[in-house]
Image (cartoon, rainbow, N blue to C red):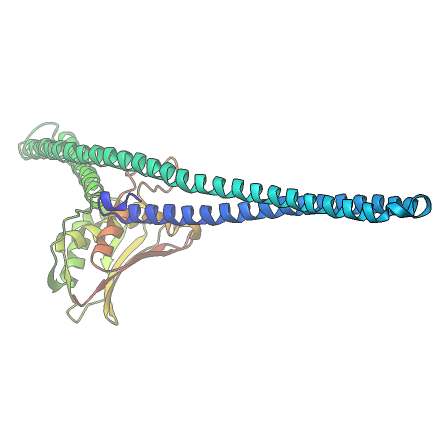
Length: 364
């Protein structure tokens, strides 16, 4: 199997395990098929021999009847000849059986020698393909890292320039229109920066290198920070966004502040996106046993039950014509939550809103 010479990967371990189980099942099936074929062949031969013996016995009975009436003195000679014929027939049949068994053993030994060679060749092809794939992925990751770094620098320059222009518009005759355009440039730049960051995160997840720096802290301020950061987005769509309830106790856990803020921002942004004007989005966190449970609840369009698991897959979209993102936010959120030792899930039904919930262990 190719496992010892390939990088650690859960998917590859599963592939190797599946290949090994498939080969073992193929060996068992081949053995069952061979045994069944041989048994059928033996049954056919045995049936033919029984028919031949029956015909021979009938012929001999007829010959005995004729000899008794015509030549009784020949019966002793006939019996001796028959004994010789029977012995010869037994020897011929034994020799034929021996030849058949020898041919079967030779065929089984040949398959035993050839099958490992064929499988070794398949394993070598798989190793070569994996090595090329690893090289291609490493090259892609390096290229993506360099390009994303340069793109983010350029986008930051565009955003800063638009902000600079916006600050210089006081007293301009067309100030309102120009301010609207510069604000739009800043918003588009922020969206492009977020998309680039998502692509970089996915590449890091695939490589098993998602950066995490967990420290102990209170998550309650983090929830309020996420809500405050997205108030402008909610207000622009006339959606009411707030923290539900008043958290009285400290909710302490070990977590990566920026990554957990990224998860909450993704969930809240999605809720705002799919909640109509006049709707509500509520964020809440509470202690549930040894876990902290976060909840982002909206009054939006909801999700069909059959899609509640699919929403956390990469490149998932609400529909074929939906182009409001790459469909990476929830996938990245799931990976971040699971890296913290938690779980994420969705509860929803069409027209009844959606509840996005994820947990975070309070212990290390």
